[in-house]
Length: 256
Length: 265
Image 1: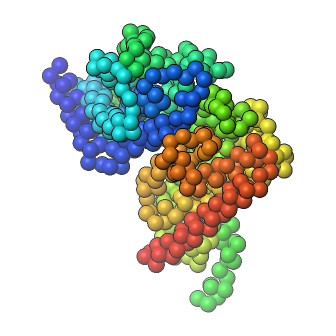
Image 2: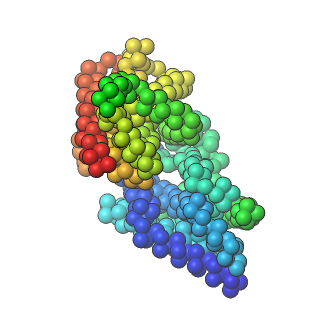
Image 3: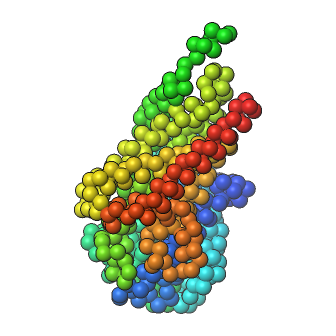
């Protein structure tokens, strides 16, 4: 366990250090969510006037919750890019050789993803509050929403680590990103589920991301719904992606 | 020496030679074709349905949201063309190929025009695909077959303009990383435009102002007018006007930057 923690701490530290000292890595993960917040909450605010749209804290808050969870997912995805970059540069192979407990590598990258997302989430939250967002949820509700964000970030980071370790090239970028992007955008992003029609309603109804998004929006509005289900689904997702990442690591070990 | 200069290929031959290489390179890298093609289509499929509730807003044009949103993939595709064009040229600069070309009688303008050949191929393919997918999903083109051809022409012109922007960035900064670093900035111009709702329905004042002054709004509205309105002279004049201005400005600055880079070389 000590060796595991030693490796995890070293990899996490390097991941955070690289992020903080390299604007090219840090800025996109902050700027993209801000753009989404501005574009959706600003450009689409009229959507709140659609009949039967009744999210009490308002459209900015409605979109903030989406961007909050989206930034969590993309925080994990960006970590996958870093893993792929480490394989391309040869650093990851040296890391595999030197780490006394290799599963600590995955844990380190994952913790790095989480810490990096905390920076992004803080900036996005401040921006939304400055834009006049109303917060109706209480302290416990907001902690619950943060918990959902953390689980989304962990799940996405483990998925991304797995893909990056299986393919071991930066060209894996679209494969890391695309499934996460599609799953997130197949949730009720712009309007509540009940206002969606056609195929998107059918898909969103069975999309686990919908449950997480609705639970987070409910918590933010102070009227929790589907929270237990959302946590259960995310924990199950993390269990699956942990196995996936571990297999990716085993594949990288075999490749030498 | 004099004989060698006399035997130097003409401008068109020079452009054709560089363009052939650019086209071949683009066709060999299928990922460069597939991702820029698929990504806007996925977003079109999702947003076309997910935002259909917007058609119930008073003042929204009397068309489906999918028809309203069809203009967006053309713009997204053009932004990807900018990155492809810029990254390709930056790779030549980084690998030293550009420096070797600079030692030949090849003119800077020919090199620039030829480098855009691959991008134009991508632009043509993706414009046709977006149009076909749009029509296949039930979007009618209000301006008819002639309008569809004009739409393709405008879309390719816009892509050409953005390819010029990518080329300018590549010549100016000389690295693929720098070109890709500008991609989010280019994407912002799309976010902060009338891409998702008509400008008259944008409620937030600052966003409305930005969208009004953002030329991308007029590029989108030019394409969109052919799909949902028919022949709208004002929208088309603004769309073509801004597209031509983008081509002239981006290529003009790129040629100037090219001269500087060749001098440095």
